[in-house]
Amino acid sequence: MPSLKDLKNRINSVKSTRKITKAMQMVAAAKLRRAQEAAENARPYAERMEAVVNGLAASVQGSDTAPRLLSGTGSEQTHLLVVMTAERGLCGGFNSSIVKIARYRAEKLIGEGKTVKILTVGKKGREQLRRDLGDHLIGHVDLSDVKRVSYDNARAIAEDVLGRFAEGEFDVATIFYNRFQSVISQIPTPQQIIPAPVPEDAEASTLYDYEPSEEAILEDLLPRSVATQIFAALLENAASEQGARMSAMDNATRNAGDMIDKLTIEYNRSRQAAITKELIEIISGAEAL
Amino acid sequence: MADTLQFDLVSPERMVASVAARAVRIPGAEGDMTAMPGHTPALTTLRPGFVTVETDGGEDQRFVVTGGFAEVGAESVSVLAEKGMPGAEFTQEVYADILAEARAKLDEAPQEHMDMLAKLVADLQALATESGLRPD
Image (cartoon, rainbow over all chains, first blue to last red; front, side, top):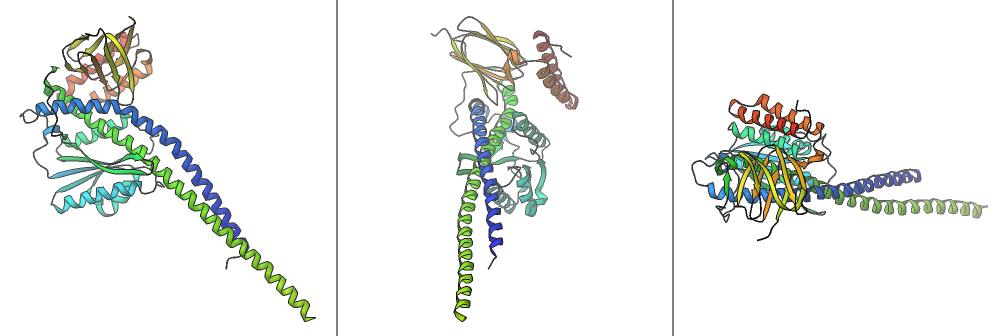
């Protein structure tokens, strides 16, 4: 049975924990609004880019001159998994859920005899993947100094990936990130970026005048499209992270409240028990006289 | 036919401008082009330069772009710029950053991309001179 003083200390410490989680929740809520706004602002560009690339890809696909970013290398032997996670923890299952689908995919590919290479973005994913897939990690992008992801961050990652592709390090690249659905739901999503997936029903946009040629434009656009997709994923991830942190901290705050209530009841009981005990002692002492 | 077209300038991070325009001059990779309502659909890559928009009110708005592409249609022009900003935001500091980045790329570029990047730097310098900045 803990002493009254112990209980009092316990209650105070849980109270300060609750203050911290409450503060973290509010910070996450403020950051979430900003992150969502950023994701929204980036949408027009991404949408148009996708429309143009799909139109072009449909008309160039199948021709011998199609760029390799579109047609692929002709093999599917080596896969690059770009795993995007947060730099910080305390955000519920956010990091684990991405790592889980990435690990599942990696193990499946290895089981099929494919070569798997992993590029991590964000510290948390790297820490979790190092344990069992450490040999497959080929690089890491550190964004811990970045307060707000900008297009330049995305472009740097894209250049790294494209450089590796140009040197023939891999055939297929897939990014893993959390798509923001709502504050309580973020969907871990794999998305293939190289070779560029073309929807089956994409219509060739033949009505355009191209300046320079279709191929030349596509050559210029595809790397940009990769950067744009990575940028969109980073933004979705940033919003998801804040959303996940917000709900995790909301839970933590509520749990701390419950715990304080329970401890307070225990404290009051022990205090009452002590008083009763003292009274009994006095009364029985008086009776003995 | 309408006598204006919808002009949108978007960069990856935000929508920079969206106005009704009578004519838009675009710095295409193979030469400037002016798009007016009813233009044939065209798709072109951009070099660094000014996008000049003649708005419905008759005044000119200038925007700086550093590359990207433009989609021209009969009723709309969309410029998807890698970096895009109103002319007034294009200051010496902004320019210095962009130029330094282009030069760094030129230094480590493989032989086959040399010409393209050298042209990019030259275009940037021309752009700076035209905006009244020091091109160095």
